[in-house]
Image (cartoon, rainbow over all chains, first blue to last red; front, side):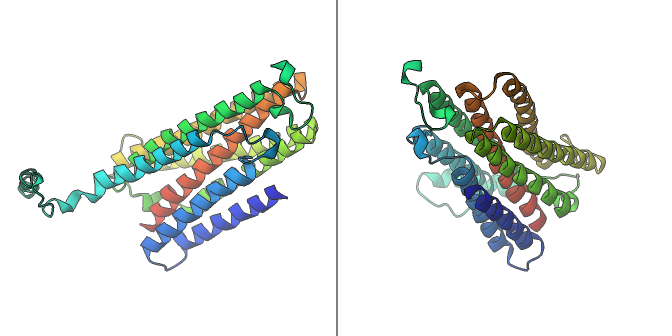
Length: 115
Length: 201
């Protein structure tokens, strides 16, 4: 039965993720990428095996795919965008020598050096 | 509406109203995805801003978090079984598995409250740093959802005792099952990106 397979899959993926994070000696970057992929897979298990996303008996008319896609796309943009804007920009202040941006950038790096 | 009622298939899909209700709930879940995305984004951006408060790697313990994860995963599974029983027409089976789901959900909440109290004793509260604010708001919002879900399910259990399985009650149970599975999806991401990554870094 679908449910039992889904349950076992989630348990196994949880244990693998926990092992990778707590016990293994893998590089941190790979651990993070790996466990995030496992989390996405587990979300897929919940959606397709538990939440009846695809279902012939409703004529597949009960899930607004465009809305769900919209939701997930926004989630990705909000999380990745915030991280990009707030964290990854920090120490690149003095590499961006591009035309009209230059003056701003110089101002910016002066501010940084001032601290 | 009633004129279009189907005679076969799961009860919750037989009327146009039921189908639209379920679709509406999926739209709500899409909005919930975005709500939690903002909280995850805030948490990710504030990661490491612990000020003078304890570090997450000092406080996060794998044991209790794994227990919470297994409780919630199992409750999601038993909730799926409850819907399976409902589609077989068994009110008894539905109530039995739903009650187990609720018990597991309460267990999860108990551990979460214990965990929060423990952190507060160690000096990590909502006020102690940007990181801990983001953590408590993210995990707390999920915990609040679980609490609401438990209250909601109890009301539905009372209702099904009184009315039995109808198009309307089975639609309501189907929708709360979606809600419950969705909370498990959110928890998987909290477990992974908050606890596991917090223990790695």
